[in-house]
Image 1 (tube, rainbow, N blue to C red):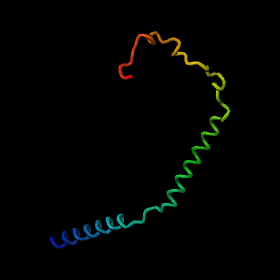
Image 2: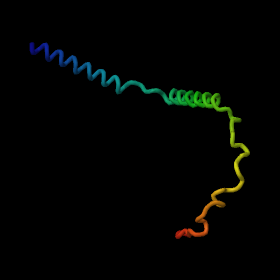
Image 3: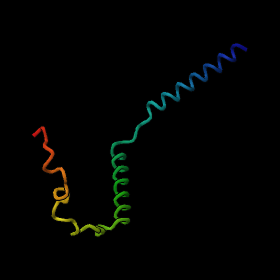
Image 4: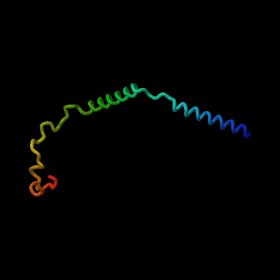
Length: 85
């Protein structure tokens, strides 16, 4: 019985070693494949964004005031002195 257990143990250890070596020596994707996949994802996101939001949809076009309202309505403009200037 002891011989059968040691044989099964040896087979399991050899199998686990083969599996680990297979994962370690498995070829990884080439840089070209990775770049092509990245480009495809970028192009898909551009296509989705361009179909959802048209480029002419700018509601604030020509509606931005020319003056800064903070400079006119700041009550502490003359009272606060910056100590670092």
